[in-house]
Image 1 (cartoon, rainbow, N blue to C red):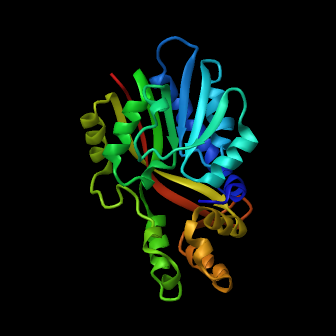
Image 2 (cartoon, helix red, strand yellow):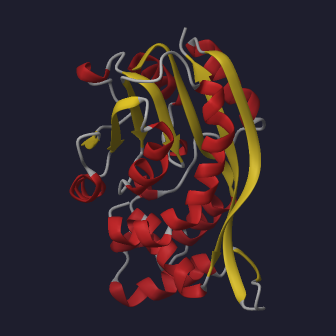
Length: 271
């Protein structure tokens, strides 16, 4: 994802209330220790709005710093320019690579919303999260266990008209997409990694109520391979995605579009 303005406008606003509901319910379960001088990390912060506008207000009174990290340089540049201040900063960091030395045992809280499904090696991911937490530190995450969107995106990519333009590395797969029991599998990973006070659930969640134009821009903002498609095919490329997702009727009877995922909600504590 390399379009921070588009993402901030057409993805983040539709997810914010869901993220707040997660923090309302589960943050009290992971709070610990004294009520100040803590550090927090947001993995996969994207354009930074969730870090600054959603997470920060929940922990502002107890932390000295919150750092948002992402692998996308355009996203971090946007976040740093738009939201950085004395308490909030953003860095280009890949949570699936070796932990930066200055991140080892640095954080009391680690959060991540709708990102971690993109990391194939979940055992390495949670080993890194464990390394970044202080003793007794906690994490709280939500991300895709399974999603119809994955199948839709791959089906469109494989169409003869588009496939010559899309590198195989852009196929959208989630870490647990082929798992028969994602909840049990993630719980086992967390247990084997060494976390305690583990909680893991999977819930079907609908996000959206998009107009046709809104859902089209949603797909443009999340599909990194959109720019690989020749300009004369881009409109139909997006339409081929939109025509396969869920629809319903809005309050005024107008057609609305939504995305539906089976989402993990997980938290745990370092010993």
